[in-house]
Image 1: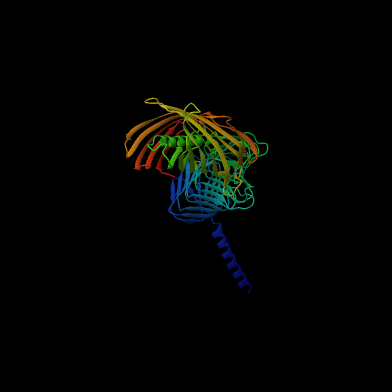
Image 2: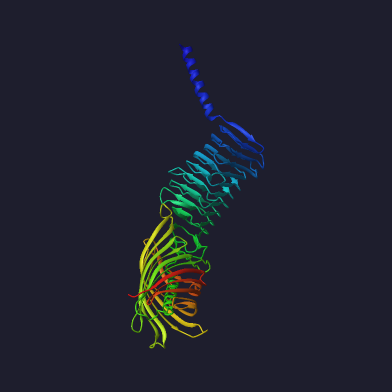
Length: 593
């Protein structure tokens, strides 16, 4: 009976012992020369101990698994060695999947590096480690994912990410990338399309001293926007937020730290608002104005281009009156109407902060002769589409009087019009206060304008000379998020030369060409007080944006159908010193109404 118990005990012991051996077995493989691993393995540890130039490649959809330290790189003087994981291949350990202790190592991943518990890559006590996570590459853990926060720390580590680096931990030790307070010279670059995120109470990325972080992708703390996405523990760090990259979660500089810089490089006119805390030196590398409280900027766009839009409106009106006055049916009874459409593009200018936009519009001009004047009605609808996620749609109605050879004003051709424009704006703002990293900000507002003009008609080769003056008033402007201003008054004055050349003229058709050279200047107060999230600032338009020289040319063709009716077409183009190019066309019809 006792012998049977002993036998059963030994059998159970052998089974348990065999199981434990199978779990904790360690097959240490020393790598002393270049090696390609092209098949899966279970339990092997690969030690790189020689001093330099060892290249290890994991390929062919291989999966390397063990409890800890699949790759153990611990030679204190090792330089120039690399570990490369190809797409489809995986390195999975419970902890420290890749462990670099005192080594200068290059890690390139297009597959998966995973720790089911903590530290997918541990670079503690290392100097000069380089980690490149390519597109489709995944580095993840259920704790801190890339760690330099232990032992003597990690210095001069470079992390370049185009894939995913994240942690699934929900409590403490839940950073995707973490360095110690005194770790120095580390560089993190998160490229467009790259994702670095966490789901716990700790900061997604933690930097030490004199380190840099550049983000063009996304950095998120998915637990809450009130948690920290980026934390700077020490001094003299630089964080640069670029392009359309997003951050979700607070950006914090530690208490008592100095020399930390927050730089914005989102592009001219890009709107952003970031919740930050701590001591930061703020700068927009594109020259946009940063409003401190926390950190915000907005492209003035629709505000700064009002005088330009007035100028283009007056050019359109003058061209319309010119076609009317040069028609064989000028001053006949009955009205004249035309439809038109145009496309205008203004290029970006980083020196003057001119925002790039496309302007697409359609409209109708109507004129009806009175006894000594003409009644004018104008309708226009369009879209001003700015480059940096900002769009204004508008509808305008204007009316006025045109007086040819006005005997009360030196026999000049004169006009006066007034109108109202209804505008709807939509802007996408980059912000770390929303889980998406962006927020749409909407606006509905009205502008009122008055335009007057006069022209002296000259004969033969002497060009006509004239002027137009415009004023626009916007009483109030409020966006649904962050941005507002009050009482924007804009005026401009244009002096122009123009001439008309008759190419063909008979009873059935008429063809003429004309050109105009405009010199426009803004007049009046060029400063605008505005606020971002309640913080007040003043914007002053660049001098280069207040002046414009434009050259336009038109070709007008008329076909007479009956005695008092005709159809016609016009094509025109415009170039200006504001880097604008406009092309458009008109179709018009003379009719009795």
